[in-house]
Length: 321
Image (cartoon, one colour):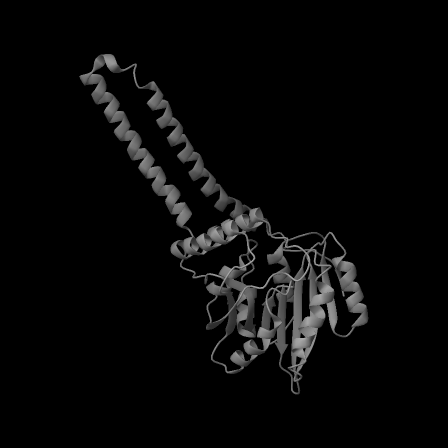
């Protein structure tokens, strides 16, 4: 993932490229020259690179050291003590740099660098504070992943006041004012897609067709994406709590009606009290299941409050150059 910052000076605007990466040893040697090739079309911009190693278990850090040694004035890196996640790497990149414009981009080149020039031109008009990107298709993705991804966007936009564009990527360019607004949100549980939308500012989206990885394998499994989507829902919507509350009310009302039915039946048919035990057991299990579901939803929110109250750092730096 990349963040690109544009620092206005008296002579030349500076572009700081921040690349959060996890197990990207194959992509780093490919990524750097590809981005540089696109920047050659924009000679009026000075640039530097900040790579964020998110506790990689392969030779990513060694590749970053080599790249930094060969380009000491341009390439820098931060290495975490362990894997803290994409959101922590993104936050570290935002904090490590200064500038007028910031670009967030995947290191796997699935976000085409050629769009950078269009982003710059749009923001230079001063009509927008952010230029985002969205995929118009999901070619190359498993069908089941595409289905659940579309379902997630539909669900979260129905239950949350924060609108998240379907197919939107983290690949975007923001003004320094918007970046400062994002940095002001120091919450421990972070969901960047929601944060980018929540802070507001005028945003224009550029569409492009899906691009598959050039090399290596994605670290985003279906289970990780599922947990990430749950975090997004609970971070930007209180509807699950409302659902749990109303479910409890409905279950309580159903139990009252059930008790009235049992009492009336016992009065009218006094010899039928033994029959129906199987249905009663099913009802008890059903209500018990609803209660456990509601407790689970409430527990998810309480867990987030618990982690936030600990005030732990979002990430820990092991090595920096």
